[in-house]
Amino acid sequence: MRVIDSVAQLRAALDPIRRRGGRIGLVPTMGALHEGHLTLIREAARVSDEVVVSVFVNPTQFTDAADLAAYPRDPETDAAMAASAGATVVFAPTPGEVYPAGFSTGIRVGGVSEPWEGTARGAAHFDGVALVVTKLFLMVGADAAWFGRKDAQQVAVVRRLVRDLNIPIEIHAVPTVRDADGLALSSRNVRLSAADRAKALAIPRSLSAAGAAVADGETDADLLTARAHEALRAAGIEPEYWAIVDPDSFAPLTRIETESLAIVAAPVGGVRLIDNELLSP
Ligand code: AMP
Image (cartoon, rainbow, N blue to C red; front, side):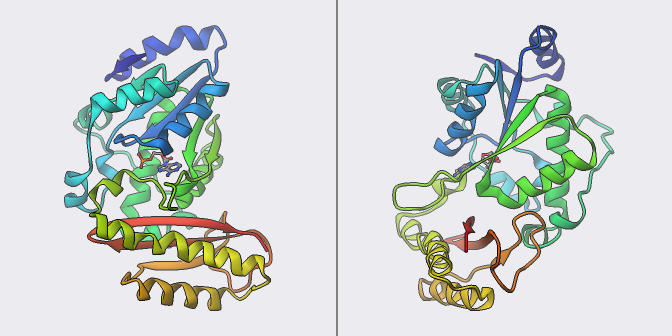
């Protein structure tokens, strides 16, 4: 496994594989790797000849400077963990390598990027995601890329971007990996105290309660949403949003007639957590 920090070295490393017709897989990450990331890397390694894991805390997608500064970073452990899951290249560029002096291009995906995370974090968040993902796709020249359903709106934004710009890459979405108690794994979880971590379990519980109600025949999205808000408030959590949406457009739904997505964002002990669950009628 090689750790590479420049685009020129990355191209030099991957060109021979591409010329031989080998399949290159990409797993974009911001590091502080956990079992969720490793699941994406293992999935990529199953069907790729070369697996590039990018580790880059992308400054353009942070709309809060304190959040960017507090983001956990552990490059040595990341490289060892990525290798153990099947990565053949860790691409860990500096911000200056990705955004050299004079950088002045932007990408905006309209529609699906606007509600929920787009509103809560500001439009700059998905602009930054779209920009860095496009750059990584072009730098790596990957045949396929793996993303986590944990960031469901991000997957929808990336799929829209790839369709709109005719980027020749397959996008794979991997189910959310959870701890045994149900909390979705996140690099941000290390910042939760034990008490806040226990409190945060109300988030996945609110989603699975909605899933169970839908499986029992409930179709009224407003009623399900009101119940979820109540359950979160009872646990001392004030959600930024808890909603039921169309899984592709992220437009809010009033009735659950086809597969729908329950989405939630909530601060717990100063840590912003997001989660979601598919609801099947
Ligand atoms: P991040 O490092 O947070 O930007 O995440 C990198 C990739 O890992 C994204 O595609 C995330 O959706 C995915 N990911 C993060 N947490 C999980 C999880 N618990 N289960 C599955 N994928 C995840």
